[in-house]
Image (cartoon, rainbow, N blue to C red; front, top):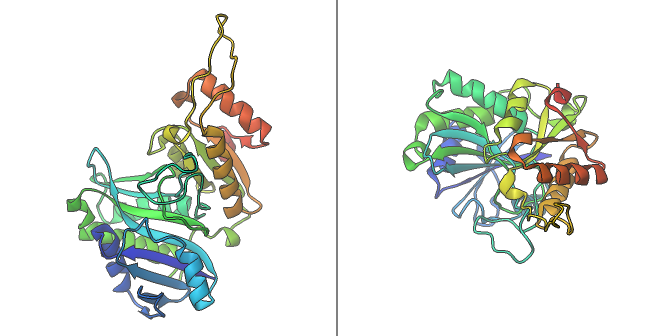
Length: 317
């Protein structure tokens, strides 16, 4: 079982950390994946391609077919953009489960799909915060999770690790070094053992499935940073839970069901999370204040129908 670390040469926030990582001990050239060079260090395989990071689909399957090695999980190195332009180091799962079939995505992936979330996300967020402090990147850089979004399409447990949010910060060598250290320590390349491996740590069963809130999912992140034992699955912000206002009678009672793809998004994300955490106790955590009462009631009812547990913050301790 190997871990793929994927970088692209056309993104400074991707190739910068990759180059810093390759400068560390133990790397040697591996087999190319067609025209994509690879580098090997223990059970880690680093790929450097020349295309958009979200457009190279199924690298896990292609690697397995080419080498015979089974891919355990995938980590993409990428830039992050934000309207605020605030410097940030981020981690997040991927998918576009709320889009309908046939809808066009400008950021890769397949409508109605979500990759299994990499079980390392929660522990790596906590490690990233520690490393960023050691590199004196805090408070200049925000350390945060993001909600599930974009591609590429892939079937293995996957996460993105990003530097944001403008070209000035994408090229920052101290940020690149911090991300390289995160991958180095997180994958146990220094010999201390990897971090966030579900198969080695599955005595800790509680997995958070985040529903609601903004793109940076602060209420869900609060739990992840506070509770060292909690794992995190998909994180669906409000925009990934499209809910169409139900038509009302004069008495204010609902006549028709609530439209939108919110049920699809929840079900796809829950199933993907279950596949990444076999044997785990998956609990939905709602950002209560981000929903109107009719939205919260509808989501709660749907979760109950689907036998998906709902957890309060105290349930994850």
